[in-house]
Amino acid sequence: MNYSVTQFRKDYPDDDVCLDSIFQSRYGDLDTCPHCGVIGVTFYRVKGRKCYACGECGYQLHPLAETIFHKSHIPLTSWFYVMYLYSVSKNGVSAKEVQRHLGVTYKTAWRMCKQIRVAMRQGGMKLSGVVEADETYLGARNKKTPILGALSSKRARAVVTDTASAARTKSFIPSTVQIGTTLHTDESPIYHWTKADYYHKTVHHSIGEYVRDGVHTNTIEGFWGQLKRSIDGTYHHVSRKYLQSYLDEFVFRYSYRDVAAYPVLLERASKRVLR
Ligand SMILES: [Zn+2]
Image (cartoon, rainbow, N blue to C red; front, side):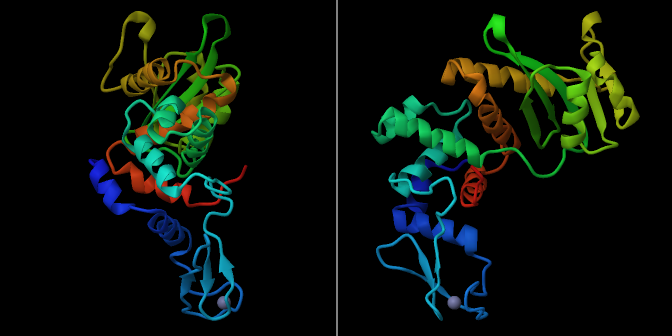
């Protein structure tokens, strides 16, 4: 959780160390060469190149291929530093800040931020335990974008949608929340159907009720509040086209708020991504 920049600089002093850590994260478990099939081979770094070769047959592995760092001319130390900033910030990191920190062009900074958000994409296990679900709206008054969200004490999910309706929650909730889970929502009719598949409990905000028998949606409302403050304060404005990637970032931050987020982000970034 408290990962200081001094420690970070010690851990990742140069591009060789950064590349090694990506290689370890991506291929560390590999003990059989995919080319010659020899078991227990060692891959060594090819001097001056961003690749590793099999000690038996020379087959090369390129740890950056198809990752967010693919074909980037930015030093890995700079990428790692921006990921570090993302992992320790509470409200996100703007491209302007990255531009200032690294002395790169705004376009480069913006692209790095976009790629790092790819590494923060949502996925994995469905939410369980006690889950709160709610909807919110982001954007200018005349063109507000609906967002559906759900969170447990450990993880969150949020998606941009075209309309906050029962039809939309019917696809969103079963895809993100384990069937049979305790589900807390407000009285909105878009969640009425969940009674069939979930242990559904409601609070009635319209009559001023915010907590009843431990049932509330305060956590997800706090999450929406933080999201809106961050977008207002750090990002100022997010177009609908990129809103989902910002939601991914905020979901990532919520989900890893109590652990060291940096190793998680580095591990995610070391994986191949679809583009
Ligand atoms: Zn080999």
